Length: 321
Image (tube, rainbow, N blue to C red; front, side, top):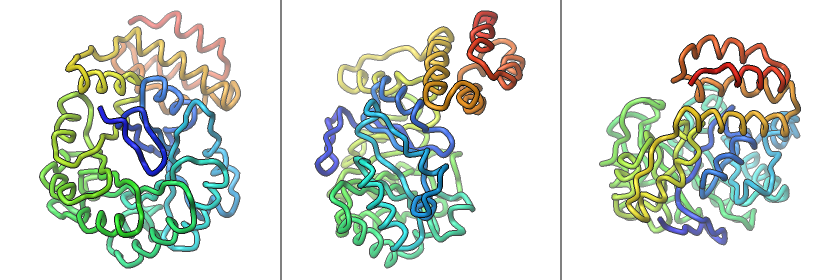
């Protein structure tokens, strides 16, 4: 695997954890780093909310040195808010700033951000140029291959990014209209990579060695980004690195290993948020750990009523693997 460099930031490998709203908080990022992720991202953050000093947004940016290097992903639809949010992030000690140009969620697009920006290349160029000139840390972008299947917007956006001083582009190789379903369009992704002069990272549907290889075998693809498959499966980063370095194939995590990761995750969450809130935050993630267990529904229902670590420890003892 490549020891990728983004601007002046050196990474241990080129396998990244994707930014996921409501999921990639500090506890999960720490676990991903333990599992070998070369780069982790904050949850997607509203540029305007950051500038308004929104308390909830500020909490999303609480990071530890265990997570570094870390990229903060922001979204916004105007030059002023995105630029000033980038400056604030730089001042807060963020290592890399990532601008989202690919989110299809309505609450993002209605602000003129995410994929809504992809139809206005002139504005994209102005935003990227201004942000790059305003901060002295690497700036990257994350985009979709197109708005609908068969469309390739990425090639032209990469050219704009390169001319603006952007250091890396992550391409989700599914069209925006597909959301997170369907196969990535590797043919269009290959076309977008063809003339790229900066690192291009592949994203979308990567779950194992085969799907990772599909991207990394494409010329000019510099790395890959994985998402929800990493939850409870944090060693996927080291597993993929071993495969590409040594052709060594490892087994997927056992039920016992997933339970060990769940214990670590709960403890990290409690340390970060406090006991009660830490357990409440974990409720939305529990299913990733227990869905293959007997009586998963009953276990989840019990977890959703917990407020103390003592309750959690009692449940762990009665879970049958």
